[in-house]
Image (cartoon, rainbow, N blue to C red; front, side, top):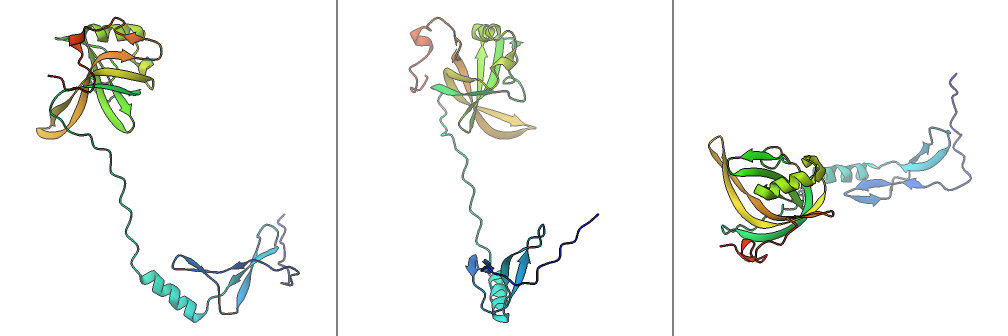
Length: 210
């Protein structure tokens, strides 16, 4: 059964809030002297008074609508990595993610040059490709129980040498990307290799690599 609530007769004992006009992004009080009731549909109680517009107010609103809209704010530019053709020693801390394809898909591969393991390192909003080769790749693979997914979403610190990699797709040159040849990998649980590297194998971080 549906119950219909009749609206009150309009006699109010308290002053109701006024709903004004909105013209040009500004609240404008009605000047026509005419208004209408606004009811709460759940109770039938009058809750507000809405101002009716005069002919001048309607004309002002139409004039505002004909003005051109303000230009959209330009999006914030994406961070741009400075380009240097020289390899560079780096130390990066970020979160491990899996790339969509080799060699950064968190899978160990055997290549003619030896074992290869890689992942994507998210540092702020930048993506760095990180690759581990040889004994380091094997040792890290053993440390995660032969499951690269155990590195996913973990915070790690990578020490290594970064350089720009040129590549093509369907014969077209694509934007180069940065790849880090990892020499040392730190996680909250372990560091590999666990023995100090020879001084000449990893330059001082921040200095160009010859």
